[in-house]
Image (cartoon, rainbow, N blue to C red; front, side):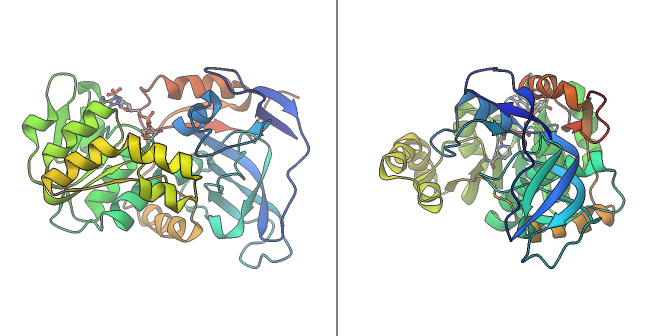
Length: 338
Ligand SMILES: NC(=O)c1ccc[n+]([C@@H]2O[C@H](COP(=O)([O-])OP(=O)(O)OC[C@H]3O[C@@H](n4cnc5c(N)ncnc54)[C@H](OP(=O)(O)O)[C@@H]3O)[C@@H](O)[C@H]2O)c1
């Protein structure tokens, strides 16, 4: 099969389009013909070598963390899926590889694709929607009447998180530049802060939850937005010791996480708020709940651009530039090259 492969770690290093064997299928996995994949910042970060300590991948590696496609074969222990089923997923770490014609996905990480979405729309969802779900539902237990500040409401995570938070009944504040204000308003944002002309910490007060996805300065400033007892959940670091424990990281990595997060943890404690780092994980059962939200029309996909398979490197570069409005998708099924 054709796949885009990372042969050596390196900043902005191009993935190589090459022929590779189709993935081995384990007993608990489903082989999916990839119709569409979407691009995440995580793909570029892994390529750059930034995740070597957390995700020590051996190369060569096929990148790609989101898939929508059709089941072609199931492993011996799989009962929930059959060939022909239309599915989508964020494959598990160490089993990624959706920038390819086929990918093997654990049945427990897969869900039926929302019936009202195209393959391209479905591929745009799993990683970012699961991230928002795990932050707002699992960690924050966001409820009606809560106030949540979701940074970068126009990005991949933000476009889903704003909609999910509204669905949960929260008041939602978000940051974006002026050009994207109409987009985030249409997704349900109540308070919109133009981060280029305003300081959010001067505008937002007494929030219950902040979903941080930006740099260390933004993280520090986010603390002042929260009321005592509030929760600061960061998906852009720094990882904390609890996360190190959760992934069974070696002692030296856990120590590094302790040191890297000591400042924000100390400042959080001083203010009586809770700091935690989230690294999302695959989950078919949560994805089924997310499928229901799409099918009920409670949330909608937001796609910025669709690239053809042969332009996968361009798609990565586009996302890396950090200006995407919603998600960037790669159409793989209708590839035009041989
Ligand atoms: N830990 C996890 O499990 C996890 C999961 C998913 C993502 N992440 C991380 O979360 C971050 C966001 O991911 P993403 O996929 O949402 O990114 P993305 O889609 O690439 O974000 C692009 C958007 O960010 C906006 N933006 C850029 N700088 C901003 C700023 N200073 N303030 C507010 N908005 C800003 C841009 O809007 P403008 O053009 O208006 O600036 C653009 O619409 C990345 O670092 C990613 O690696 C982590």
